[in-house]
Image 1 (cartoon, one colour):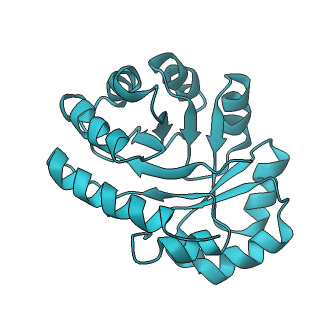
Image 2 (image 1 turned 90 degrees about the vertical axis):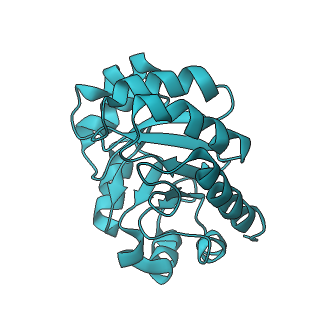
Image 3 (image 1 turned 90 degrees about the horizontal axis):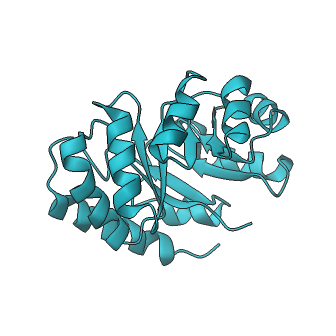
Length: 202
């Protein structure tokens, strides 16, 4: 199974800024872009992003905690659904909608519950609390086809370590984008992060 790769988390992005930022992220080679639903007018941002860069990278909705938001995200053009928790109803709704769910898990118990609900891509969150050693222990017992993506505190100083431990990608939030950042700032960070990821070995 091909890994998800690097996911840009644009928390706080506005519809007016999302296309310019999305363009530089796609040009830098990031694999997916997530608009958290606690951002301003998130479905408008998802729609604009999907239209602008959806052919080059996966566009998703993040912080999805309400089943009703799953079809809204799909209709806006999202292909992935990212959540901070592992709600079986959100997982099922995402699969039924033809989308990939990425439920958030912080313990092996939550991971196995999410897998039982149908998830095959798990958001390890908060990653800095679980740690690389913790993820290695999880990787030893989880099914090999289940992907782990650390999110929370991941940056270009430890991306290689996460990848070597078996991560299929990583979610990049404030280390990549903060509201008000100019596209050229985001481009520089994205290029550095992409270099750190592609230069790492599994």
